[in-house]
Length: 230
Image (cartoon, rainbow, N blue to C red):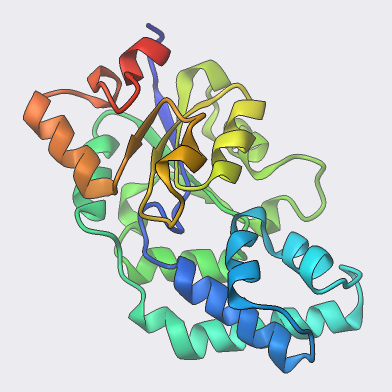
């Protein structure tokens, strides 16, 4: 079994209960801009990033003034109406604290740097990570957020593990040769996350399992046998 030295984590829906706030913000912004959509349509595409929401749902050119107007409306809605109410999932801080003793931790996100840093500070998670990748890091690059994170964390993909909560995160990590432990607290069902090496309810579930077995992450047998698949 290969030794894992670093963790890439997806914060939204994984360590932070923020998917509802993000989906509501985008839904309200699109509606205010006169673009008809449903909350569920936005929610189903949330993990693909803002560019996909604007092009697929909004039918907008990404560099157009209208697309930028929607971004600006969404930013104002998110920061004024939702940010202060967002909280980490149960035991998120404790789990990161324990993982931080063993692994280098990098957050991987398609969120703006402003949103991501505000979210990490609001939820008290910033002190447990080594760094993060935001939309700013991929704006002028052909690299995916995970590819940028691999470069920044200075470890090969074979030494990394992903913690995420959407099938998009699982697929993106797999494309880079990285396995994923997934959580269902982001709103996706276990069958949606079937390509992950293990699935847990939330950070508390994983932390409880670690403590119960007196084990590190890679010693834990998840729903499909983590140590066998890594």
